Length: 283
Ligand code: 13P
Ligand code: ZN
Ligand code: NA
Image: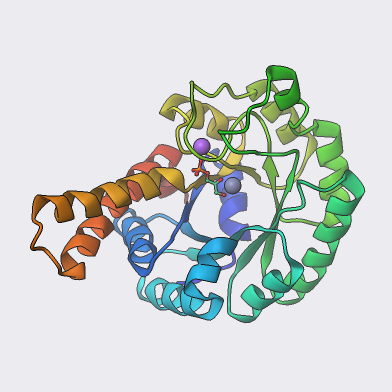
């Protein structure tokens, strides 16, 4: 069933487990994600980025996700990922999203905070959860040196002030991860994560989890990450699965075969990530 994720994220925090927020790009990936959670009896978050919603339509994405979630016995949250535009937040709330992320991480501190406050006001009035980001999780392709990178990390004392004044339900932190695939092995600042965890009251979110070694994800969850975002590690095998079927038989033209195979492959990856985060063990 479709739920607001606040309760599951709070439970995850208390139990030192994490919910996976998995980015869906097509109808098949929505099904793949929810069905994986269903098989494991785990809560899950289906995430849509602004560009995915431009591609599919907000109402269309929401309608499909709601229909798929309705058939599942596990809690499913429908989440808007990295939204930079207030009108898009409002549209998603109207269409039944249960969770929204306002991303003002590119803005100066006070502007980021003011934007989050504005989103909290409308979202909470509608019973929708709000995530926002403090510090900046960039792309793995950003060419920053070590000092530049650390300058983008979340500062624990600021996080405490930010969460208190904004009223957000969860906070995305910058501790060394990046979106996309990594050139080398990412190094997470786990000390900083623990300091942030000690300083703020709300569940913490790890972005850019694709390409982060399993051990590092486990360590971050053990130190208080309650939501793990994954996009690229679903996208790459999805493309691979389609390619495999189409290259394997040049006469294959049935979308149910190549997209069906892609759906199975994405679902298997989703299952692996849910198990990695221990979401199936949340009681
Ligand atoms: P990856 O693409 O690195 O998994 O990042 C996903 C993410 O943070 C979505 O918000
Ligand atoms: Zn992200
Ligand atoms: Na990544």
